[in-house]
Length: 515
Picture 1 (spheres, rainbow, N blue to C red):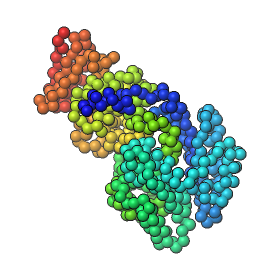
Picture 2 (cartoon, rainbow, N blue to C red):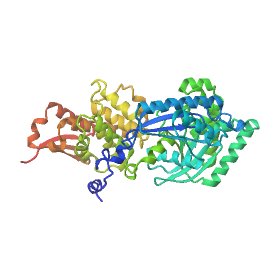
Picture 3 (cartoon, rainbow, N blue to C red):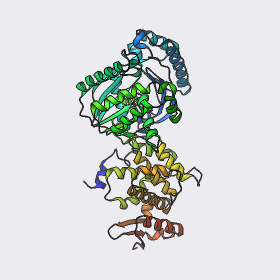
Picture 4 (spheres, helix red, strand yellow):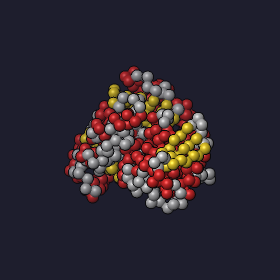
C-alpha cells in the first residue's frame, strides 16, 4: 500500500477525523485523580481531551502514611494526620474546580494496615471522598496502563515502586499481561532485620522469586515511582546529561550499576543540593537503589526506561474509549495544541502536504516527527519575535508529551527553532544538540527551513500556490509557481526558498506552471 492510500485509510492518523468533539473524548476534559500511597498523597487533575493529557493541576504531600507499618501493623499516626489534612484540601479544591467526581485509590499502606478500614471511613466522613483500596495485582495493572498511555508500543516489564511494595507487570502489544507484587518498598526494607547483609539477602531472595514467576526474558524495564525518578535524576547528574526531563529518560544497565555505586559513596545532602530532591525522598534512595541494582543483575535488561506516568495516568487510560487509546499520543497532543494555540488551525496539514515531496523515502518514525512539527509550527506566535525560536525549542523539549524520546524531543525542538531562525549558533540550547548526530542536526535544519518557507509562502495553502519537487540525485530543488501565485513569491520568499535549497546542498530553481 502506498503512503497516500495508507494515510487515507488510517482514520486514527494525524490528519484523520479528530476526536475532540466526540462525547467520549469530551467527557475526559477534566478528570481528577487522588493517589493515596505509602509515601505520598497526590491530587492530579488532567485536561484530558487529547490522547496525551496535560496536567491542569498537580499537588503532592509527602505524608509517609506507611512508615513503620511493618513494625506496628498500623498507619503512621503523623502520616495519617497529614494525609487526612491533604485529602480535605483536595476535596475542597475539587469542589472549587467543579469536578464532577474524583477517582481515589489507596495502595499498600491502607490495604495492609489494621486501621486501614477505619482510615477509609474517617476519610469518607470528613471529606466525602471514597477511597478505592486496590490490591497489588490491580496496582500493577494500573501502573502498566499508565506506561501504555505515554508509550503505546511499550514491550517489557513495568516496575512500580512505592513506599511499602513493588509491583511488576508485563506489557506487550498494547496489553497488560502477568502481574506480581512484592514487599520491596523502602519503608518495608527499613524494618528488615540483620543489618546491610540482611537487607541484601532479602532483596536478592525476593527478586529471585519474582523472576521465577514472571520470567527474565524482558529486554526493557520501565520504571514507575518517585524513588526510581530520584535515582534517574542522580544518573543524569553523574553523567552530566544535558536534559533534566525524566519521562522517557533511558539508561543502560552499566550506567545504572555505576550510579548505584556512586550513590553509595556520596553524601546524600550533597546529592540533594545538586538535584533538588526532597529530604523525604532522598532518605529512601539508598534502599531503592539496592533494589534497582538487583533488578538489573537478575533480569539482565538491555535498557532501563523511566516513565513519569503510573497509577494516576493508568486510571485516566482506564476511562479512555478504545478509539482514543489507539491514537498516537504525540500527534494528538500536537493537534490539540494547534487547535487551541495556532493562528490558523488546520494549516499544519496543508504545510505538511506542501513539504512532503522532500520526504518521500523517510521512515515512519521520522515522518511522524515531521507531521508533529508541522502541527506545532505556529503555536508560539504570541511570543515576542526575538524569543519565538527559543520558546519553540523549550516547548518541544520540556512539554508534557508522550511517545517521544529525548533525542526526538531535541530534533523536534531544533526543527521548530529553525522555523523562526536561520542560524542556531550561539544558542543557549547548544548543549542539548549533543543528543543528536550531525546528520540529525542537518535534517532538523532542513525541516525547519522548509516550514519557514512554506508557512509564509501562502496564507491559505502553500500547496495551492506552488509545488515543490526534490531531485536528490541531481541535487535540485524546484518550485513550480502557479500563475495566480506569482505575486506571492517576493523577495523574502525567494530568500527563504534559497536558504532551504542551501541547507539541502542543492541548486534552487523556480519555474512558472503552464496555464
